[in-house]
Image 1: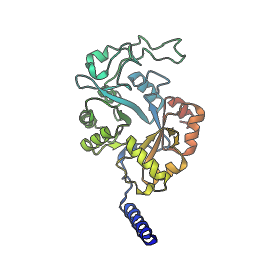
Image 2: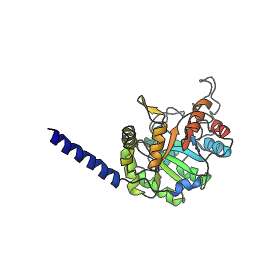
Image 3: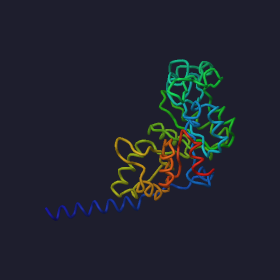
Length: 291
């Protein structure tokens, strides 16, 4: 029995050594050449606690603050136009109900995207009737030419990978765009169609690395992505910690954390040394960084 266990242990060690020798870190990507300071400042949905999120109004305010990246969420309309809105439904943010995918662009444009935004627990709704609409991705690209953007692919019935890739190239944003998605199938599909564009890890990829890293085997991980975009913890498991950051950096991967919004939370992640912070209060983040 001892001999069998010894052989099995030797085979396991050889397997790990082979995996380690065959693993590779992420290559450098020109998207990250856009930034000279860390942490990179992401305006989450343009700053959702300052303005109605995912709107031109919010992105304009964020750009005036001087944030590094405008973060946004992409859906597709019934007539095939990419629009920027967080939810699959319009119920939470607008004066209507229904799925974005069931509406034409003309119908989407009729909606008041500032209707439900409030910062006083519903006592007032200061952006109602102010002409704030759901923007198209093309409108965003036209309004902010060359501005670095983080676009999250949401789970839609129809794929948006091909039209997203096409519009990125149409507006020469291939080195200015970082694509994210929680959905591994959507991320794999986008990478196949648009392999030159920088992407963040999907949920499955992140889970795999977190487990390997906790087992001190992060060096076995060969990434297809260029960054992890993660909360501090998930399901009671601490993700963003010094060991995770070191492990990610050893694979040439950045760590972007979402979404600290108080001074204390934001300062904690600045001190921890993450590469990027996604916040609904980019004004606080910029102030703490002295920018």
